[in-house]
Image: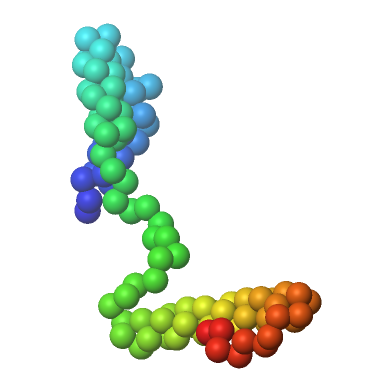
Amino acid sequence: MTVHRLFRTLDQCLEIGLPFVMDEGARHEALRFHRGIKSVLATIVYEEAPKSNVIDFQDQLLVRRVHKAIAEGRNNQIADAKIVVQSYIDDFGWPEHDDIA
């Protein structure tokens, strides 16, 4: 059980039990404790937050696939850019440059 879950459980128990506390002194003590737990909950980083869509780079196969996909995307962008630049060169009547990489 994480610290956050422990304090959250204590908080929920106090919220459920507070209406049944009849003694005014005990009620004030419980409310003071409850406010303290709320303060602690506000400062604890929630450890059970849903995981993001970040890729776990521990899996080498996955790493290779990601790098391959990135490389293919970059190559496609470079090829598209080459076509655009070459079309502008052709429009101005400049000699064709196939060595643009």
